[in-house]
Image 1 (cartoon, rainbow, N blue to C red):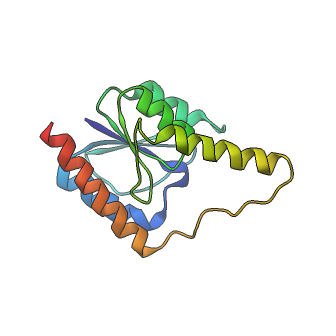
Image 2 (cartoon, rainbow, N blue to C red):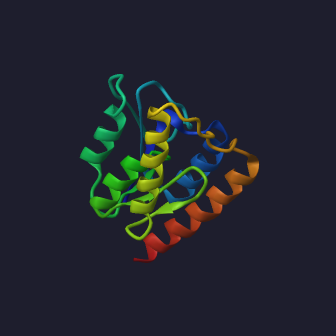
Length: 150
């Protein structure tokens, strides 16, 4: 299993937690972004900087993942593409995307986008807090342990 991190919107608060998990599980990790993102220096981590563009990092990740890989992203369309390749996806708050919930997340995301496109106002995401870091760490650990058991 390889770990891919969609680095463009990766919260700084998660970087130490992510680095510890990468080292603890010896995860072969690829951080993909359109600008340099630093999670830490490790033989387990490689950094890929893609061209600027809305979906360049997403396209790279989807092209590179294989069944059983794990992607960390808050991008719901990317998560959908990841799941369609039989890989795992988890967001920055520890929410695991899967076949059972991804279509619901996509529908809600598309509805909110349609409202914004038609001039409506929607609230943005809730601010990322230390509590979210703990929830992410817990869920990531559970997911990694369950994947390793398989």
